[in-house]
Every structure is written in C-alpha cells, then in structure tokens.
Image (cartoon, rainbow over all chains, first blue to last red; front, side, top):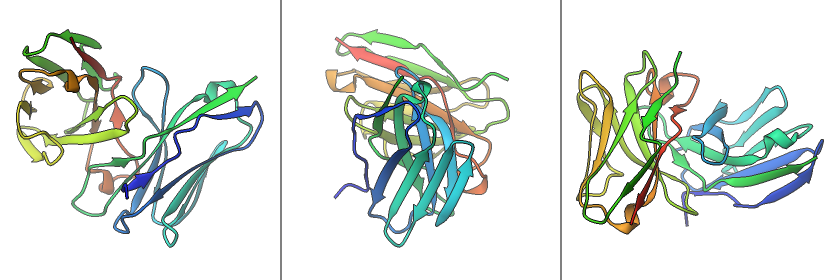
Length: 112
Length: 117
C-alpha cells in the first residue's frame, strides 16, 4: 500500500462547478497537510497548509483533514478555466521532519 | 523578491556524462530540498540540506548522486554517469525554517528537466 493515494484523473468539470479533490494516506504519523497546484512545465505552488484535523478556508479554496479516516480533501468553489492544473496533496510528520510525501496528483480540467 | 531559481531549465546529456543542476533559494531561506518527478510519478524526496550540511539524504540513490549547499553560492545536485532512467524533472524547494516550525510549506522552483539520450 502506497503511503499517499491520489486519483490521477483527469477530472473534467464545467466552469462554475464545485470541485472535490481527495487523498488518502496510511501513515498515522502525518501531522501537517498541504495542497499544491502545478501547471504544466512549472513547479508546484502552495495553495493550502493545515495542521492536524479540521477545516481551513482561503477564498474559493477549502481544505479538510480527517485524521481518524486518514483522508484529506480540497474543495474549489466556482471553478475557473484558470484552475486547470494538477493538484498535489502532500504531508509530513511532526517535529524533526521536513520532508514531504506527495500524492501523484490529480489533473483537473475546467471547461469554459 | 526573486523566487527559487533553478538552472538550467532544460538539460540534455548523453549516457555516461555528468549532470549538474543548480538551485538558488529564496532570499533569507537557509533550508533547501531536492525532489525528483518521474513521468507518471509523484514528487519524490531526494535530499534536504542546510548551509554546508546534509540533513537528510534518505531519498538519494546510493551511487552516482550527490548534493551540496556551500556557504556561498547555489545548491548543486550532481549526477555522475547518467543513465536513461535519470530522465526526469528535478525540483528544488526552499524554506526559511523547517516546515513544521512555520505555517507554510516550501517554495518550489520551476525545475530542471533532464533528458538523457
């Protein structure tokens, strides 16, 4: 079983739709959870950063972490064509660890 | 305020040659991380460095790969005697402090795409 599982997609939605992206993980030691967006031929860009369980909202983006289920989600409201990219979940353990474990990424396509 | 700068953006090497990838972290960042992204694969951690020190190299292949972050100048990821399987995008990231000590993750560069022919 991989440490972090993420459906590669592609996920195709019309403009304005609510998008739900998810990752599951197996290592209960993970404490910090992140979502990155990666446009084609570019480096990943940090979107959301959360610690432990709960929700965090930033504009059109909401990140959810459910540690009991080892499940994290990213919701995008009012999706735009410019949101078309690959979304990577990433996570790391607590004190003493700075390396991130990434999912493979989900490709999102938002059509106008 | 320039971001993380990586060069070259594209690098083509013949099998058996050496590849040198450079990374200049963001101003004020003293933590540097190298990740590799193989086709159809996620980002995989390779090595974590602070100035003049390798903190964690658990993701580095044991042979042919080395990394440094000297007191002056960029961090260098060096791959000796490259093989076709080394073809990938190599990303560098930097942070001001360790991830768990801050409320943000890394800042990534745009990557170096290595092609071994």
